[in-house]
Amino acid sequence: MTTVRAAVLRAPGTPPTVEDVELADPRDGEILVRIEAAGVCHSDYHYMTGGLTAPLPLVLGHEGAGIVEAVGPRASGRIKVGDRVALLWRPRCGVCEACVSGNPVLCELGRVQAATGGLPDGTSRLSFADGSELHHLMGVSCFAERVVVNENAAVVVPDGVPPEIAAISACAVITGVGAVWNVVEKAAGRPLLVIGAGGVGLSAIMGAALTGAHPVVAVDIDDEKLELAREFGATVTINSRQADAAAEVLAATGGRGVPWAIEAIGRPATLRQALDATAAGGTVVAVGLGAADTEFPVPLNQLVQRQKRVVGSLYGSSNPLIDLPRIFALYLAGRLPLDRLLGERMPLSEVATAYEHLVAGAVGRGILVP
Image 1 (tube, rainbow, N blue to C red):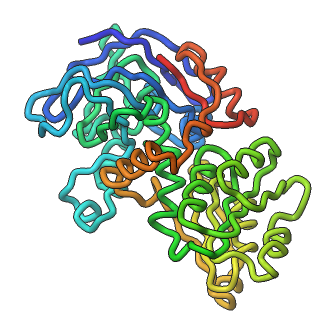
Image 2: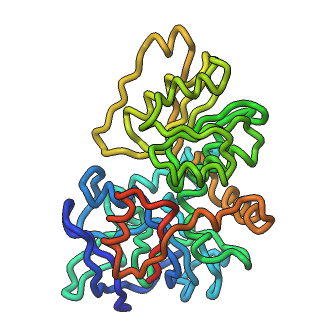
């Protein structure tokens, strides 16, 4: 048992508190990781406000990277002490229908973690000093000095990839880039729209530019974020506070609209913008999460008469054990400028402030350093 500092959420609508908690030693097939960097993601904020629910109290954080300090018994040997790893918030058992059919982000263990607030075996390695149980978030809980995770929720990071890049790659980057790689088809030379220029949306823009989409259209309400989108490969930028986004997209594409639109915010209004901006036969790819009860009204005749589609993409519809090494390789080759995606760095003790800045529209992906 180890005492660590961690950001604890006790109840929705209350700020997280950084306090001492107890962390048990890794069990079979688990690893102990000293966290070097953790990304400030909007998904945690949904749990903080109650828009999404999980067993409470819990330790926040699901986008992290660090150094392996211990390996539990009966491990595979794939991960060793001293390795830097990026942490995955979707486990993979390797034997359920989703895993064997090539869609591991829908592994049945994800439901186990969500329902129990534990690791894939349904139990927690976290507790308070008095012995009362403390839960994990998405099997990661990396807003902490150290974590215990299942080894199948970690990917080894190659030399040369900094911890903050490894951290954001395992959530924001793989979600955005992965949606382009794994869902969008035949992007080269064709228009692609991304609504939302936060960490996920900017990653999608990088993926679109990398695959040769043209024009790449970015929509947001913040000019500073749109300027960053241009740096990442957007060729057309639209401030939807100042103009009708769908009309501007149609104008930029000769009135046809885009064959593919990625919505990276998770709001009904922006999903509707995406649908209105797609061409006949086009597809809206929804990657942004909203509150659990969020609904999106779809105009039926657009679906039928213009044969449009709306599809969801969780975690970039990726296979992280394959896609994350590709992302790291492209970063090292200078093809994915992920350094420019990073925003402000703050100590773990300022986690509440970091989320105030996120909600206020901070540019770039914020990083917490335990």
